[in-house]
Length: 318
Image (cartoon, rainbow, N blue to C red; front, top):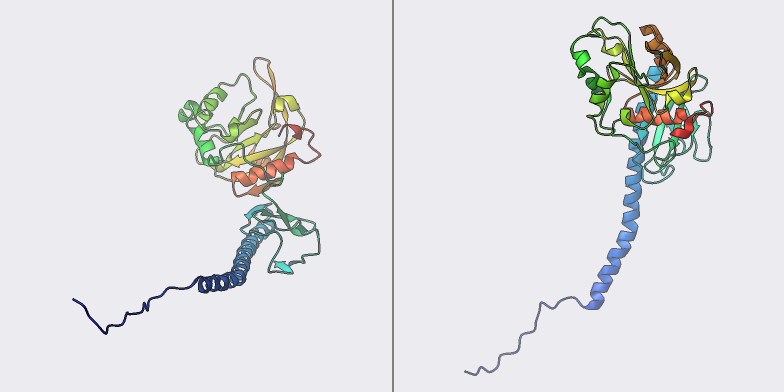
């Protein structure tokens, strides 16, 4: 069948031409080149605001502790992705004001680094001190041990030993179990429990550790775990060394002890992590002479900084 007089219909759904598409892409690229940096800068300012808020909170805690005569150091991990300050000049924290081009002062060391840290501490001569550094800096080491194992587990392994389970120390006001003691009947039981852990702080090569304090029930706060990366037998007696201390109630400190000479009942000699500590007041003095930290990793960072102090001549080992 043939139809006449019917015009061929035009295709009204014609698509975009190449030129039109290129124009649209160009417009989108221009808008993106303007919008993305603006968004990125806004995001970075938000990160800096969070970082400053966290540092101010740490500052408040440090100053509160200082007013209570407790030395506390706080480590704040920074969120910002760019070095320096993008949105603040000057920076104000508490009563301290610092400008970008001011350099180091008594209260301000370094500048913020992308993904770095801020250590907030207290110095009696100048007040609060803010130290900014990079995580890759030698002062902020990678941890050679399992950081998931904390003070609670370190003391749990002590409590899991057979001698502790038998309440042998229940009436003992001051025990000492030093890992360097060659004749101890307790150390093998403790090491047996330590070996059940996976790469703990106490399993690091050459380290020396000691459990000390009260064996009486309900006196967890008067039990201590002293640790140093140094082999005290090689260091010798009468030498000052930095120590990382964990308490039975979960506190962390970095302080200093003087190594002590010991002689076993069989006449064997060894060097303990600390000279004799006889009572709670002497333990308290060791803690007061150091600084308190919130976690094992923060305390370990501070320990390595202390170990690098020129006054210690034994830092070549760690």
